[in-house]
Amino acid sequence: MAGRLAGQSALVTGAGRGFGRSIALRLAAEGAAVTLVSRSAGQLEAVAEEIRAAGGQAIAVATDVTDPMQVRAACDAARAAHGAPSLLVSNAGVPWPFGPVWETDIEKWWAAQGVHIRAPYLFMHELMPDMIAARRGRVICISAIATKLTLPFLSAYSVGKAALNKLVEMAAEEARSHNVQVFAVEPGFVVTQLAEDTYNDPDARKWMPHMLDYLDQGRGREDAEGDLERTAERCAVLAAGDYDILSGRYMELPDPIDGWKREAELAAKEVVA
Image (cartoon, rainbow, N blue to C red):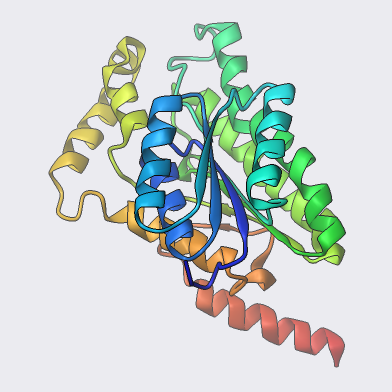
């Protein structure tokens, strides 16, 4: 398929549903050959079939994104099918556990950090050497507005995503001289399966009734799924290189990234002068 991402190999985690599915479909529509990764083989294959039916290229690789050996196998499958990925979108996430820090299950809290931090780190560790060798690559990590808010009883999610933003900053700075860019994107609000899991979780219902009200309101609003497309578009423009100068930044959908870009370009010219 022709498009601004033609010739790129992309790997998207959490690609079987929600934001990951929407991002994968958009990247494929823009011409990227996509490797779809998550635990759910059936959901992944359905997305892959959707991409192929539209004339795109996609493979599905069921993977535990917290397991180094499975991550390596998924990356090897991507290389074999489409060449070394020049684009990684790390989207996998979990909302649990809910509750005060002194009551949450220790192992479950730490398992959440495996998804939020260990998984993107493992994929960066596996794929960024190829990008650096080629002097071309972009990493997009799906973050959350919870990184900017203090949301009681949501510590595992909020801390994990905040740490992810710092990982993005560090990786971006380390890779800057190698022409590899790293971004954190907040995806807006859609009642995805992750949100439904939150809604139905007994601990969420106990500790976060205000969140359940918010989800109920979200179901009824106009353009309830609009942020799926807006997030996919944001990932597509970042993947195309339009905003490489903003590498390392955390950005939300309403943010004035064109203005940020102009400011960064002016600042860069002043440094050169």
